[in-house]
Length: 303
Image 1 (tube, one colour):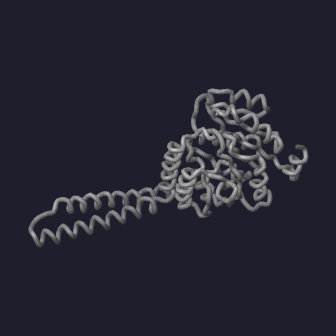
Image 2 (tube, one colour; image 1 turned 90 degrees about the horizontal axis):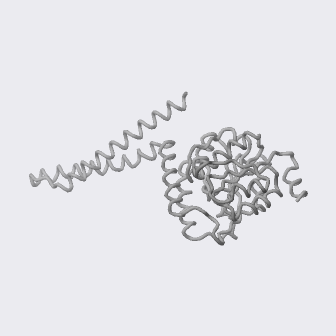
Image 3 (tube, one colour; image 1 turned 120 degrees about the vertical axis):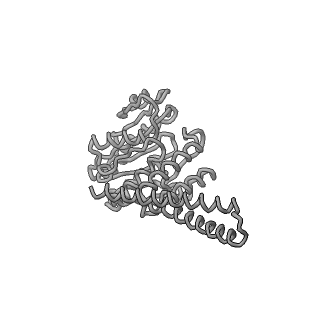
């Protein structure tokens, strides 16, 4: 244990590990015990648990942040970020409390930061050949990652991994605000805006037993909704403008078709006319929305 801790802290870095936890009494004790091989500075955010997560974490010597009620994964990450800043962390690691991650991979996500090759390092489940990811999770994660990649320069394989490390610069400039599961995407978008370098390393993960406390359907819906929100704000011309132009083009096509048919038959084909009018109106509204949001974004950035 002493040797491992010496290797990881050979540069006298203040390494802090944060664990968001909600009803994790089955896993939290063993996780903290294993993480103590890395550092004594372990923070647990008990997000309104109704079990013994809080008591076990304190008994194991972790610093515990309490939420009086369940506020969500994003709220827990925000509290952990604030505490890590408060205790002046040089490197901050987020480590899920559901027992899926292994402490043996921590050195992998620390190394790029120690070498000044990255500001944020993500442990990717898709870069490891030894990871047995359930098919439904794989499809969902890849879909959400593709959506996230549309808003950032660095193309990632696993935008939703909660196993990450942040250097001091990243801690200083990133302030998470999203309370739900889409906080993972929010952080990446904000990091990209700040010009932070993001990289990935392969990690192993276990899906054996009842590890995750998140319902995959509600989790996926929450992340997609949150990601769409951030994409729409950061890239309004792409998000609203392109669909708006497509719909406006369709509307004009059906409008011209309606006029041609009227000229030939002196009759208005109701269905064709309604499609033309509807798509023209919606397309115009989307284009105006994209222009308004884009203008507002420019004004905000200039302040």
